[in-house]
Length: 283
Image 1 (cartoon, one colour):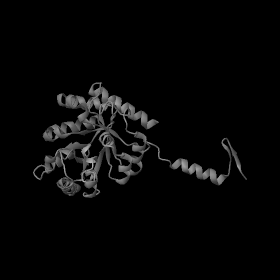
Image 2: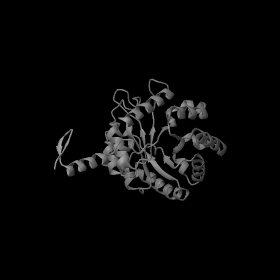
Image 3: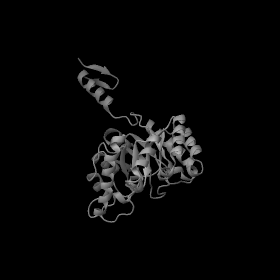
Image 4: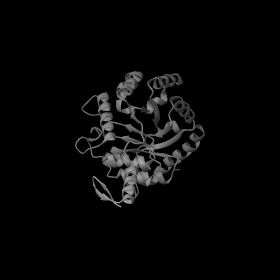
């Protein structure tokens, strides 16, 4: 016997099927993925006052941070003081950005020590520099593969952060594809959205092609009018499908806001971007 509902007559079996379908639709942000700030976004403030800047970032509501290359020159005492502050503020260091020197045989032990002290889980290669042939990406792939093996016993992982260069084809193949194919799946592919979109690539397609490897993303927007000074949500990145892909198949563990400048101060910019991101999560 059909039951009568506000939306019309529908049999019980179909109603239950529709109800189940609604319950299984992915809800953006349902997994409560934490969001941090790449500290390069506030680099001048951070250079002048590291502790005060981290306090300001935590006060905005960020869940954590990603430190960039200068952290590698900190003493272990400085790192321990920063970790104490992070714990006090109840935020985390999710990862660090590094130059190739951090991965050199004579330096990798220091990188491990610093990252473990900070509580970081990922030692990421921020850039491979200017490379003009596909074959020249081989040393970078080998560096990441070796680093993955070295870091694993220490419960750390590595990964690569793209710029525009990696999404522009060389000899018929994008360098980022070469890196993905020539490194183990344990090597994370940290996706910078703004540069990916500027280079003309579809980030949703890339995420789906590399399911489980997009452990983190730089939530940086881009527009033809304002370049990377477009605030989060004000550029050309289609954020809803990107975040949904990241949360359903990408393997995302944390998000990172990154901004290269705007008409506002760096701290104001970081705050506005976080506000916009939180609003998107609720929509």
